[in-house]
Amino acid sequence: MTSPSSVDPMEFFVEQVAGDDVTASVLSMRKLKMIGDALGREATLSRLIPFLNENVDGDDEILLCMASELAKFVPVLVPGSRAFPLISILEQLAGVEETVVREKAVESINTIVPYLDKSDSSALLSMVKRLVNADWFTSKVSACGIFHTVYKKLGSFEGRREMRSLYKDLAEDETPMVRRSAARHFGPFVGMIEQDYVVSDMLQIFRSLCVDESDSVRQLAIGGAHSVAKALDDPSMNSEAVLPIVRKASNDLSWRVRNNLAKCFSDVVRNMGVKSSDMGELFRCYSALLRDNEAEVRGGAVFQIAKMTQLGGSQLFTNYIADTLPALSEDAVMEVRSKLAQSLMDCAEPTICSKVSDSIILKSFAPIFENFLSDEYPEVQLHILNKLSRVSHLLSKMEGVVNKVLAMATGPNWRVRKATATIVPFLVESLGVEFFENHLVDCWLKLLTDRVADVRNAVVRSLAKLSKVTGPAWIQKEILPRIKRLYANSPSYLTRVTLIGCYVALSSNDSASRSLQDDLVTLLIKAFDDKVPNVRMVSAKGLRQFSRRCDDSTLVMKIKSALTQRISREEDDDCKYFAQMALDDIVSFF
Image (cartoon, rainbow, N blue to C red):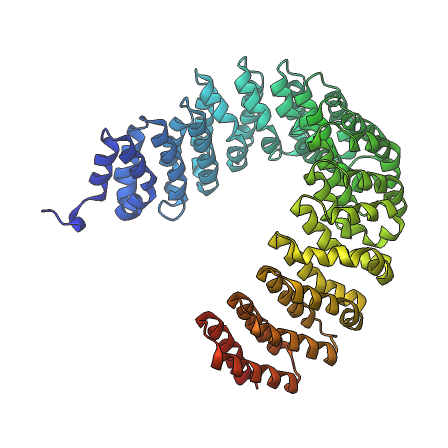
């Protein structure tokens, strides 16, 4: 019997791949890199790669694995100076009929090309020519995807000129699939080209793709407008070359073209480096997209509001965007309202958009916030609630919004209740403690008994923030007695576990008074007498956390004594374990 160590990896691989079992062949091809590592560099170059070059056929899944694995050979197993034979294999794979195989082959070619030697430039150009001049469209489609990496690798003026000419041929190909691929990859390619040749060669190609008879070509071409604007890098040239295309695309008969423009509109404007005289024209186009008849277009445009406002400033926002907001806030399509909610909250975040003043938020945003908090879809409500803290300094002037938030504390959706619990400290910070006492405290504390753990835990987390806003003395006087009553009257051990979490959260406040700390320790120790082991266990964990932060030796000794007594009479092993851990911590620190 042959020992495993004597089996030739190449023979084993060939046997598996050439067999009739497709599953075995696929599994073997997925280990192609491992086979190469086992063979070593020289055997891989002399045996494995020639074999693969002669056997580019079979099941599509096998070819897909081959295309994926070949990119992993470079540069460790196969150095860049010897990697061109891999490109020859991938060239064959780039011409097969299955789309996913071709795309993976293109991806692998783009991964390997940067490692190749300059001496391979002429061979690369020849490969591109073969793909471009192939009889079947599949090779031409793949060729479009490798132009940008090959062009960057080429050093000769003549070679680069020829590649620009070849791309023009692809963009004018009679097959729509080829023109679509040329439009899709135009952006990466134009980004590699020198500015002079962008003007002389590439703008003509871009214009022809943007007016193509096929809307799918125009759709993909307009997605490259921001790359063209960046490549031109001149406001005047962009005004002459890109602005007319944007203007035309914003009114294109195909909603897909308008949608693709809407999704990248802010990128186009940013890269154009627009002159102030042209900014109004661009905002008119953008405003038209916000009012588009198709919901997908409106949704794509709405998502750009914060970025467009940052680029244009408050005046252009007021002139061209503000008037569209009321209609968008009542859009029949939920996705549009949801994206508008996100965008408006982004406008209130200075790190994203610093051009929206408080007066604009109160005038234009507040009525929409109020409307969205009453939306039938929780997704829309949550986009406002989760980021309402961004406008917390204005809540005292948003009575309608505050009233909506109060009503949502008892809403049917648990995510909404959780968000409400989180926002309460910010309401207190803005509206004052008296407002909290009169309107919020009871409904907020009621969330501590919510049936959903995430809601209860949200209250615990927000309690620490509330303590910092109101001060520990107020917490000790007004909140702690209510929590004690909840604990005493709670039939659910889950609620009692949550309330212990409140004690621990309050103890984390560095400014907590000695009196408050003493009360919290007493309550945590009292929980040791609970009949449910889970509660006693959580109490032990809480005391351990408290003792680590506490520098009052009297309190620590009080905790130590309670833990010692608890361990001596505790029957539950888990409770005893966590109590012992807390005691060990105290012994080691004190």
